[in-house]
View (cartoon, rainbow, N blue to C red):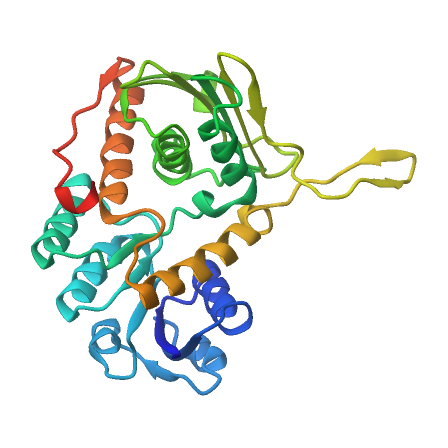
Length: 324
């Protein structure tokens, strides 16, 4: 059986999702697309129906499931429309622009009584993170004590402020730290270097683990994500972000990508295939709507800690049984 999918938003991530669906995902056909740029949608159609109204696409009998990759501010509304139509969706992060808005999406899904939404925290499907989790769960390093994260970008535009480093970048560490440890984050302290970049964010979990994250938006040398999990009996960490080493021009080593797309290309591919299988089987995979709410709620409180230079004690709603 082939799943008919519609893609909403055809920017950098939407175009990549569209490519993955067409070239690297089994059991799926892109039957409809929608983008604010009609010319871009026309160029990418390749026989798919082109819609100017995303709600019309969601309600169309041409599609059984949706990929939402439109601007962040539209995610919650489109996710709610998918729920109202009873159609599964893979929604790029964030699920919503605020925790309150995300909780409305969660409550709408709970009212339906089944999980239809997956939030695009693709690091859960990255081979390096997946292997780290497997090692930790097998008990090889003992009980986790400290998780050290590094999130560096080559450069950020001038308008990319300290809070945006939290809401656009660090939010990935929020989700992946919860997933790796199987713990909930309960407090945060944020230290900012002169000028506001980099940030050092120290968090604690409900199991007493310590999570440290360096968020450096202007590291210049490239895009670099790294993690090391320290246990009572050993450690597990990512190796360098390359599968080859090059000898040339009197140098030996590897290069760093310019942005996140090459680094997490495999993660996006695995995520898309897992989502299609999950829709077909009815067995959810990846980050849930609750995980999307959790990440946004924590991010908001970390931003407050940054702005007030105080320690944040996380306040979250009660997790519904649907997401147990």
